[in-house]
Image (cartoon, rainbow, N blue to C red; front, side, top):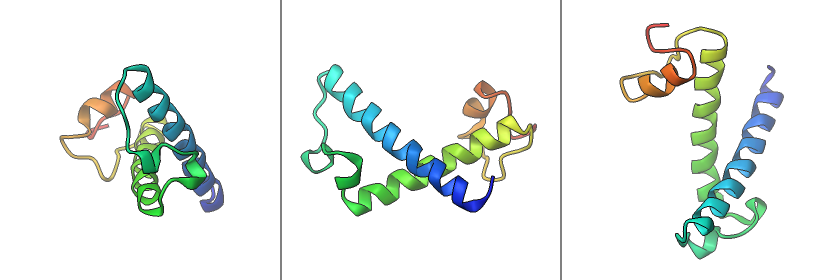
Length: 91
């Protein structure tokens, strides 16, 4: 995957994650911050940067698991996630 495709994937993941998070919060009766309870394009820049960093890390974990390679940023906190995805820090 080239850099443009990887960035585009993270952008799509962010929007999908934002929509899913807001919908689930509403479904379970939890109120999110009003400034982020907007379409993804209107979410404050700082919030978008945090989500992009999270989704880029998630993309890298999945990429490592799919390619059966160790996740270079892996530590003990990621082991259960990687195991669920079929990988692990010792993969």
